[in-house]
Image (cartoon, rainbow, N blue to C red):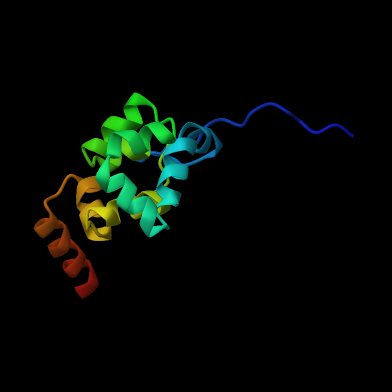
Length: 121
């Protein structure tokens, strides 16, 4: 019995980059680089020369610009997985609330206030 090989339609959630197989392939180099930040030596090497470190992993120009500008949404759109991107964000002392504020287009203070208001309900 042969399995069907036709691709399933890509899931679309308006305003949300969906991390699927296609995104995983697109973001492989970016995610591999971020995974490397589990090592202190690699974090230090990145801090010392981010461009050379990105070159080492063959990041695309889109991925390099997203990293350089710390634009989390651009990194997600470039195939980044949020769990790996958190390792890069940590180098810059950004936390999950910083990332959430950026994803929603809110200031950090407004994002924190929104979280507190949601928790009060």
